Length: 395
Ligand SMILES: C[S@@+](CC[C@H](N)C(=O)[O-])C[C@H]1O[C@@H](n2cnc3c(N)ncnc32)[C@H](O)[C@@H]1O
Image 1 (cartoon, rainbow, N blue to C red):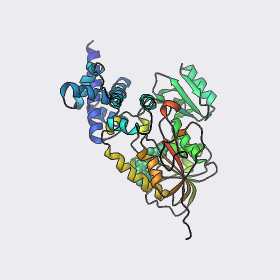
Image 2 (cartoon, rainbow, N blue to C red):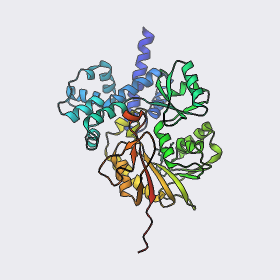
Image 3 (cartoon, rainbow, N blue to C red):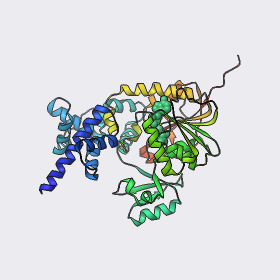
Image 4 (cartoon, rainbow, N blue to C red):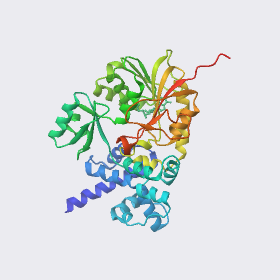
């Protein structure tokens, strides 16, 4: 009994510390979790990770209930204790539909309000619920059948994807993706299907590719595995380039990827490309199931404006050195998708790939650019557009 309660105290302390770190440093759950463990001198453990994961997933519901009771927002320790008490489950929901949606699905009101301009309420509800779920996809480095058999041997239910025969969807499993048999044996790597679709959209078999925002190198590696002979992979973050160097070794794609530390707003490249991939830095609203710290980080909507500006600059500069650019962002916000490609000096071409729906209506790119939606495609939410630089007229 004593051990149990001591263990639980540790779990709680990790949650409080990780929450403080996320609120203060604006970093991912994984990074915050390991930083918290380091500060408390504790070892990683599934229970403590799941505990803070669930708190973050319910962040706005807990804050709403606390606010109703105390008339002010909860500080990290109060938030964790309030969650523990279960009181947030008893709170009566607001009567306004959008506010209710925001509390029930636990997203900031401004986000729900903004998305409701592009999606009907039922679709929005289904989308936000699906976004709250973890989705596990494996990219097979061997035959998908072998990956499926290995998973079946450990009692894990999975399916080979109907569109991409090298992707496997894990339907139910108690294990984290890194502990699954095929991953431990090097037969597969966890990669979201949305990332694979972004790479497919470029149709880059046989082409050397510029990957302008490349780290940690998932899509650069996929490009090689799907038949590109060389990828020039640029990223402006030193630490993420280091992560990429490790990851491309796992993919066994190191020989064909040239990593360059640089700023793609002014790429230090003296050649041009037929194909380029631009997977921009963004709010990450499409990947909440993997990293619910994004919910907390979304409390500052102004950051989206900053991302938008960078995304426009990146697309304008990359489209000057490549004939075709796939612009992708893992965001649900039109500010980081439709509005970016519409504002840039590019022509947008109709994209023909499976497992996508039309992007939001009312934009220049509508009917041409696409989106993946978690409630339909069971993967992260991506905006994907095929862009070509405008040919200057001679007049
Ligand atoms: C969405 S992530 C890319 C993920 C990557 N494509 C993959 O599949 O692994 C965006 C990346 O853009 C990088 N980035 C941000 N601003 C940049 C810039 N101006 N030039 C180059 N890279 C940039 C970030 O460091 C980050 O690694």
